[in-house]
Image (cartoon, rainbow, N blue to C red; front, side, top):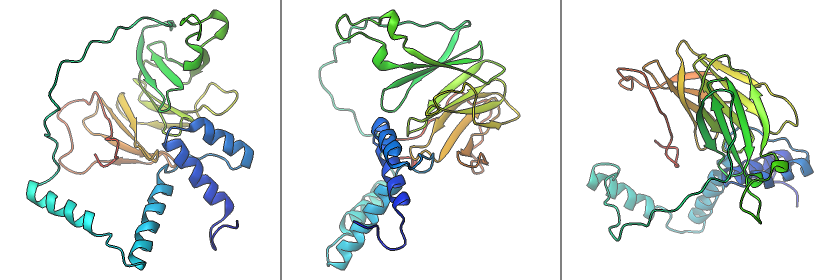
Amino acid sequence: MEPAAGVTREEIIRLMLCQLSAYGYSSLSQAIATHTKVPMTTESNSRLSELVSAGLQSESRRLGGDVEGDAEMSAEHHEETGGLDLGRAAHSGAAATMPRYSTWYMTRHKGAATTAAFSRDGRYIATGSVDTSLKLIEVDRVRCPLTGMARPEDKPVIRTLYHHTAEITGVAFHPNGLVLASCSVDRTIKLFDLSAAYGKHSFQSMKDNHAYRSIAFHPSGEYLAAGGDGCEVRVYNVSTGKAYLLGSGAQHSAGITGVGYASSGAL
C-alpha cells in the first residue's frame, strides 16, 4: 500500500516508531527502526495518536455522527465544578497488606549514590553519584530466573557514563527509552544516547547559572523541565536545547527540589 499523497514512507514509519515508544515498546521500536533503516528521533511520541484522533473525528462529522457530545458534557462539567476536580475521595476499604521485599542485586559507585530512575518500559535503571558517574543497569540481568538472584557473569551494569564535573542530582529517561538525561551541581544537564553501541560522553548539554536538582521529561518527549537552586522552573526544547521560563507568578521564593509532569502532560 502506498502512503497518502504528500506523506512519505519515512514520515509514517517515524510516527509509528515514536508512538510505539510512547506505549513502552522501545525494544520493538528499535527493531523496526533497524529493519526499515528509519532513524529514531526525540520528537513528539504522541503525534500519531493525535492525528488518528483528529482523523476519526473528521470522518465522524463527515458521516453525520455526533462527535461534540462528550466535549460539550466535559465543558458543562468544568463550568459546574469550577475547574479540575483534583479532590476526589480515595476508594475506602481494608488496609492493603504491606508487600515483603528482598534484595536481588546491589552495585556500588565510588562515592555515595544520590539518584536513580527506571526507564518507562522497565528495562533499565540509571543511577547517579557524588563521584560524577552514571551507571546503566539492565533489569533482565539483575536476577537469575532459577535462583532469583543476580549471577556474577550476567554483569547487570552494562555501561558507565561520564561527563559531569560535580555531584549528579537527578536522572530521567526519555519516553522512547533511547536517551538518558542527567543534571548536576556543575550547573549542566547532559543527554546521553543509549542506542549507540559505544560512547561514555553526552551528545548534548544545557547550562544554567545555578546548580540543577531535578529534571523530568514531558510525556511527548519534546520538552525537559528542570529545577534547581534558582527560583524558576526552566523548560528546555530537547531538539534545540533552547530554554523557556514559566509565566509570571510561577517563581518560587527559594530553590526548587523536584519537578514532574502529569501523565497527560497538561500539568
